[in-house]
Image (cartoon, rainbow, N blue to C red; front, side, top):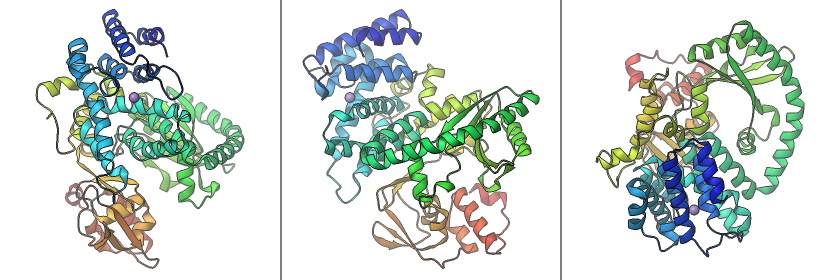
Length: 503
Ligand code: MN
């Protein structure tokens, strides 16, 4: 990436001549400051910040973020000072550069404080706190991490493993929290290819073999569904979505490495104009093929906690093919791929303004970034047909972060109990929960979990859920699973009163 290429890219993205001048002067400043420095690849250092800025243009961020991307390593790695940057490039860009710099310092400073907890704990918490100021800081950091991952081959194998682990445990989950699905997948794929090269290649080959066969068979289904939708005068786009290698790996782990249990190697994704069309398409597909009832998911009525929305269904065709469909509006699709980054494209209003007006505290001690996330999410969905009240409940309630003994991170709503965690991991772990250990000590099932807790569920095979368990959970997911399991044991679960549900 060269100066002229980046400027052309910004031009294509319709930035004004003044903004292009602003960007050009930032590039000149950063080039001067990084002069003589080299990347591990041997290339001049400046290619890195320019590529980071290019990522931010692709993600359609505002000009201050792009300029901050160009400048993001100057304060940390060169004689440039924050004051200089503020004088030359204004308070907004300086504020963002400062956030990115602090994030780096917090991470390196925190590394060995708490050796008994997984290293990820500090990193994640600090990352979250630091970005509480402005979500764009985190997005710039993701752009930075993405380019570092793309150039990881120049580092030593030990560093490759270390950085990949951190990316997989911290940055990919953060991208997921921001619903930046495309970036999350990129980070996961590269990390996984370094962490388990053989497995990655093996799965990639397997996938290729199976996809070849599957996509031929799928053509027929695609044509049939397309015809049906056209007959019903629905405007749509249909694409095949191929599962990522890493998510295939995760899924195979859950299913004893049984490839036959993976129904969504390819899913057909249908994008339509509005919410009503989504449900109509679902109905038409269910008219053509037999749905697998337990696999119908309505993430439109109940969005995931990161705001993801879609209808999912898996059907069996008359010739015994199993096909997954994902149905969503254009807006939902955009949000699933680009997440919160998309909000800066739709809305020019800057979060930095809120910061300057003192509406956001400078160094929050809590995870008030969530409030920020909410603000942006609410803006994103303003004027949209989504039920913002619902989105608010899912996005606005505070989350806690707990860890499995292996160091995997799970986020749960505040007040979540050990069985919520158990059912979150897997419904069989929930069903067979005998005891729970929190931070190495036996704990009670009615004791709420806290951020940072390491939670281990001890299972035994002949445990059976009882009606009482419904009082030991707060998440809708655990409630649904327990009720299903009770029914299977021929125990009629108590009727749900709407009053209880709201709690
Ligand atoms: Mn960097």
